[in-house]
Image 1 (cartoon, helix red, strand yellow):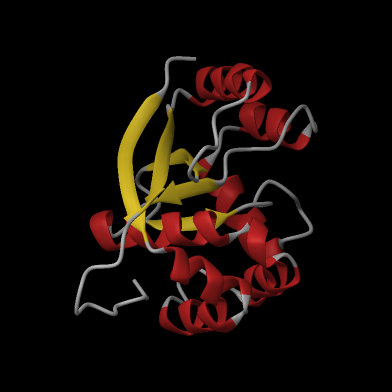
Image 2 (image 1 turned 90 degrees about the vertical axis):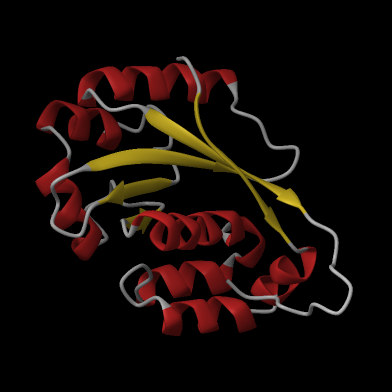
Length: 168
């Protein structure tokens, strides 16, 4: 797979701390109900260190493109709202691959509100890299869908003097 970078976005480490304390996840769920449902919030608060970058990625993409995102586990039928959207977007042969358990799907399924366009996005925090298995699976998925899998990276930023903004 040829990597398709979207870009690199800065985040302040305090954002991640607030997310881990469950405070920021609850705030983001209230501010972005079109992105996060109760199940997303349940997952984020039960495993707070594992979902921060995915949530931040969905917010960044929404604020820059207007596109919505399904965050993680969207390929499973156990998430009816997500499954309904996925089945409208993803070709059946690709959906079969996604549900086959070969590997975990990209972190985000990003789509236009009118369902006219969509793509996958893998989100990587500082020091996180695409693993060989991910590259192989994403290449297969990309071929079956005729859609690239984009990569959005995050890097830590330093605090700006006199600036205390911690939320997106």
